[in-house]
Length: 316
Image 1 (tube, rainbow, N blue to C red):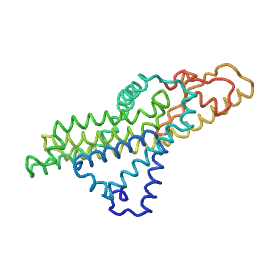
Image 2 (cartoon, helix red, strand yellow):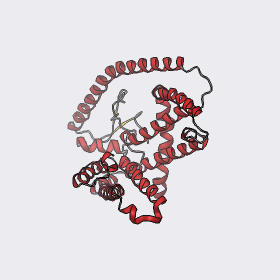
Image 3 (cartoon, one colour):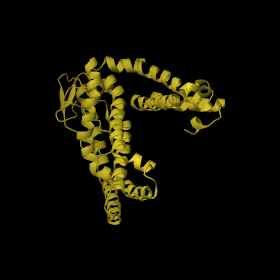
Image 4 (cartoon, rainbow, N blue to C red):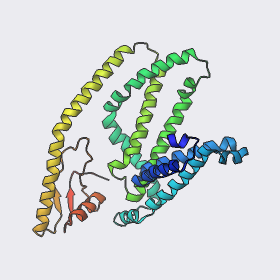
């Protein structure tokens, strides 16, 4: 970011920017799409007010660097998205139709709200509570400023509606690459950008609630939330220390079992016992559907001559 906003245009800055953005474009399709959206949006918003004086705009070193890096990022992302690795993944997975390509991100977004956010809601409330307190301070600043202050505009009902629309649109956009490639909602790690966007949105909601709070009794709330955060983090640490070894051992036992069955010449489908909770680890659980991509890659990786499934495993 510092290199982008710098007025200098030295060659080493361009090389560093190319390395950084090239790594981002090749690391994750979802994150790459999100960064590209930010770059293109910045270019558009930068160009519209100065469309009558484009010559001076294109002579701006900052604009030149951003335009070059955006074009470079699109090129690198194209190599990733249309490269042999992506095509190989699509070849071993079920192919989604055109309608499914646009429907799957919406279905996945509903899944995130129903399954993920509801499970993490207590943690979210504890995490964003300090921003609620900060919102009450912004309200005090608001009272000292004029009616057309930025605080009032930023936390108006129109701004809330715009923030909600942007949250939904950006989450949908971030889900599209993984859904297109995997023909499904994709692995848990593909939700990283969505987690960040949802966290920013909940922080905004917390600030919004603090700004519009009518009660002045905020100190007891701060004490309660601080105590709740400490207790939650302590509880999480203890439970993770207990569950992680159990989950790790279950994975090892499963690997030993499937390799043993393979050596004994098994051909029939093997029904495996479900893994215990993985906690904060990424779960390697299989699906009841033997054609699901986790099951397919599990079979290929261990060179199995039979299919594996878990009756109560992950679902589509």
